[in-house]
Length: 418
Image (cartoon, rainbow, N blue to C red):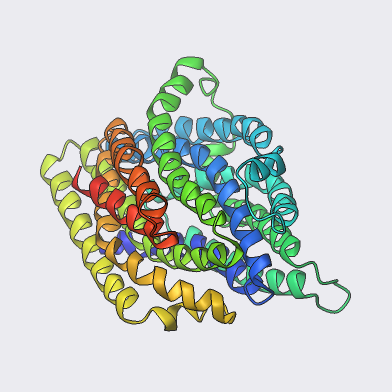
């Protein structure tokens, strides 16, 4: 499990680092710039998360086909994934275009709305190559071919760091673009993810993509992928929407609160990438074992993944509780933002283990082809328990921004238990 999980975790952390670098660089400008990028990122992820989740249906399809040694099924699954990636672009674009109206309707800080809207619109062209990258990544991952993905992630992170710094602050002939520069860097990085992975993975991908399978556009198999992937998409989207709703509610308290929330949630999201990667590896191992009709192997993979995920998040919980200022200072030097982030980060420490257990459990079920249970669990945990608790603690009970965070703890605990 570790041999597969470690490279997958590197990939997940690398994906998250693209956003972390954006936050760290823009955080050096001002709290308004940081809040604008935070809002923009929240909206883009809230919309694109369904498509990303839907494409995760490739995990059980490709991994079980690999376990059964069915080359035709692998090829058709990969090509159908790319067809769906193209199809997802139109609804994603239509949902993102009225972003300024959405942010105004949700009463976000007026000074951040124009910058956040500009950030969102610039990110739209990067969604198609990003969806394509997800297809290639999940397919290669299910085949156990991780080296091209790891090299791609490292390469694009280095590019993103240089591009972010140059475009945000200006360098030579490049003017200082501020938060808008971060958006251009993000779009370029997402495009590069697809191009570099397609090149580096050409040995494995060429036999799968060099000719169009005559069966690839048949409606019933495409509908089957959508039916399998839609619950994953809704699960991912429900989770991200829950956190997005908390972010939007945080914006009601002011720019400083929004910026401090972005620092804390960014840290929590970064540590979450590790059990998310372990969950993906677990899905692959469980799927391959099921494809090979090896029930004992599937059970061993499930228990190993849960143990690794919970162990890592226990260590992260201790770091969040005992060293919050050290962690927050990596993101911002604005004292008022730093002081509030130090309050939020230990609260995030309380849900670390819950977060690890729930995401690896979802990976186990995904590998087994059960995508409905995690969706139901997310509705129960996040929306029927966690979000109402956040609202009650923050507003009627008067705990404010801290109340919003304690509601997240309750919601994630419920999801893990369910």
